[in-house]
Length: 454
Image 1 (cartoon, helix red, strand yellow):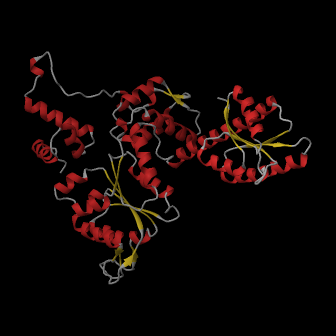
Image 2 (spheres, one colour; image 1 turned 90 degrees about the vertical axis):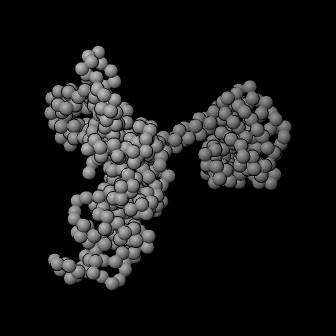
Image 3 (cartoon, rainbow, N blue to C red; image 1 turned 60 degrees about the vertical axis):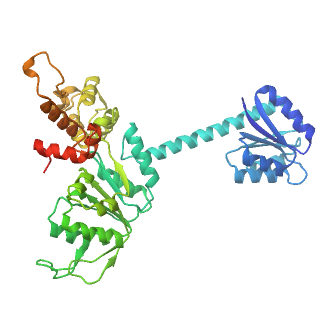
């Protein structure tokens, strides 16, 4: 099919003649005998180009052209003018018409004009599609990756980017949890507001309380001046509570109340201060297990876990390893002013085989080191860290020819459970799901093995 054409002429015979001439040339033709009917058809039909006569009863072709340009700018309009009527043709172009053709209409010339118009629309649609792809790529440009897990993360972020619901980002260390928080801030409606971050594991309880909620002068020793808390500092912006699983148990009720009431009372103060923040929390631990073990309040867990973003470990992202490696390679080569532009096939093979316990952060460090050591225009195996070059995948012993290598069932179970927990980065909920047992059962076994993490 050459294209879908809507012909508009108040003379039925002219419509039928044009349809008969264009049909054999591969065009799908519909026609209407009034501008009003044509506009109604455009609302529900897929049309590549409109061909209209200018001189019609009622709404003329010039007015129709203006209406189409206003309501369907993606559909080009070709107008038919009287022979020698240059002023009318110019008026049509000014009204937004793509092209014009003069009477008497020659079918070959008309087919060429329509073909150009259809191609013009097709190119516009392609440019629009590519622009959309570029915008989508830039939308989450900090989160490099094309694997299924990362596409799902991107799709989820796209759906909640302007939401004020609390977000809990989970994942192993180095998977990019803070990057997600910054993406939510930079791309969301609060991007003009402040982005404030605090590491809940990096300071003692009293200092953390003061950081979060603020204090008044004289509230405690060394409180020589009033301090505004981070909740108030982040007003109309985003507050990141990094490693929220390490929040002291005594502080959790105060945090819960602040999130529920949207006010904070500074230490030593009598007045409550309102705040408006988008809360993003991150953790590399299993908060559900922490709740069951009494180390994290269940009501606070539900408050911060309104939207859950699970960042996949790098070992679960397939060829994203090479995509990220190339990304970091170009970045660090540019900073260092070196002409290193690619990975050798052997280096790529080693990168894919490695388990990446440190995830994306470890990969970035490895590529920075490789670029610094590279002597050629490619990163070779010799440029990679020793542990990546020498890495061999570990396996759980299932059988052996030497009876001395066989172990009791209980020991095989212990090795397998510990291997699964290691493979999922210590996430007890996920490990229990893989093993097909309850979290309490798994935790009991880990305590028995002396590997509970406490």
